[in-house]
Amino acid sequence: MNINKIESRVNGKYTYTLTHTKVSTEDIGWQDVYGIGISDKHTNIHENDISNDYKGVYSLYELIVEEKLCPEHLYDVIEDFLSENKC
Image 1 (cartoon, rainbow, N blue to C red):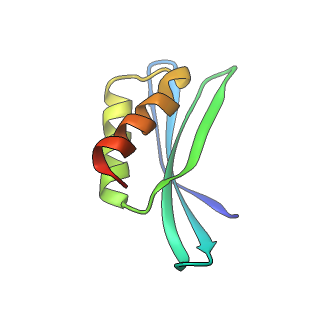
Image 2: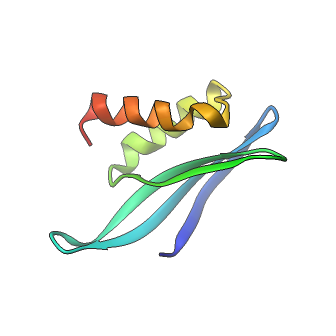
């Protein structure tokens, strides 16, 4: 799996990264998926395969950067996003 960085922003003490990956599944074949990461000097949390909905993941990414989300909350926020958007 080749993960490509689309964008990276620093806000406060965290660096936020939006990524793109191509994944293959038996049902669909190759598709583009997008992920978000948060890192600082001691922590690097990343979810590579949130959704194939670029606009939705990008909106989530912008909100996470704006709110200066801590890495330990990333998975909960993604889970809420997916349940609300049924991605």
